[in-house]
Image (cartoon, rainbow, N blue to C red):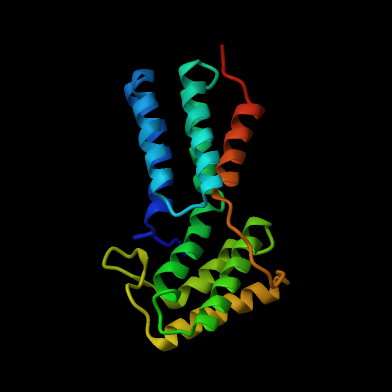
Length: 209
């Protein structure tokens, strides 16, 4: 199931802004790179990420933009950075972030239940990042909270019934348990994922003549 993610807020906005750097590079040329990078960094600053991740993300955006302006990176390589990032676990993990903020923290669950639900979501995020949980298991988790629209796209439900929330939380714990993910907090590091994408392209390839 491909989930069309609407309403993910600052995290997805940040990612799309980074992708916008590449679009500007490819369509308008190097003279507009600095402005595009500034826009991406503004999205990073407005995100809910920890300050250390914001700092590292801004550094990678500037690294990417500077590499293009100095011809150390081709436009094609810059596009591959974003492609690798978007095709990696980011969007799948963004589902975890969205579910916690939109469904769990706004629910009538007790503080203890919310903490347990968030912990299990963090366990799932860790399992995906460490390749212990397949993406199809995320689809299984998302089934109670998604529905098809008129265009046939799977989108998050705006609200959940108590039964739907219970089913979602039960599946989250089930998937984390079956993968033997440690029952401990896990901080999702978006900056590390993006830095790895930049490293893979910049250090693994060199521009053509």
